[in-house]
Length: 228
Image 1 (cartoon, one colour):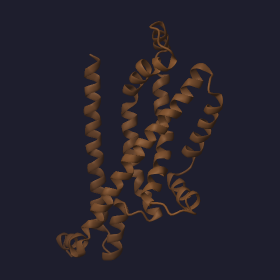
Image 2 (tube, rainbow, N blue to C red):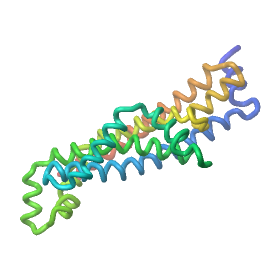
Image 3 (cartoon, one colour):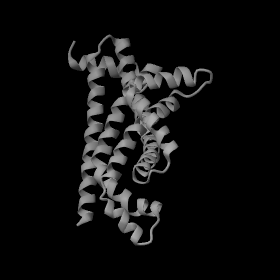
Image 4 (tube, rainbow, N blue to C red):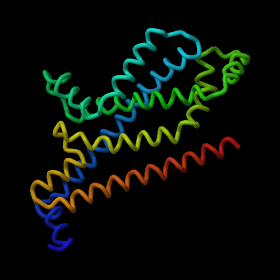
């Protein structure tokens, strides 16, 4: 069977291309909202940990943050996904997309937290003193002086984390969520021809990652030019 015949069999016949299109939509939706949750959680945890390291305050919250980081970074994301779906939400009917967003958002938040924290701690302590000398309190100094500089420093690492998150969502099929990868697997199970659908999914992921990488590099150049 030629490549064209395989393409027709896997995508044209019975409109199987819809599995890929619908799966792509699910993957992008899960990734987008998981990123937003990850940023929110990561920012809060990073502020708690950096505040404790700088001032010694928020001891209890810092302990809880450390437990969260240890558990989330020490267990596989697919196990976390299964626990959230089959254990935490076992007694209620809940949208699988919602479960995936929560699971991947919580997982991403742990890594984003450490990225942001490292960026905050890399800023010269003199910057904090300069903010205080201008009459800013701790929160104002963090918001107006420390965090903007830290964000520029950690932008490449944050971009890499979001790219990793996009690829990690491919395990969402473990809870029978029809994402991009699951769509290709459904086609494969119907046609018994794995080459074309799986190669197509790999190409789609690659294309999205290349686009995100290009946009991140463009943003980095713009941020660098604004410093001059």
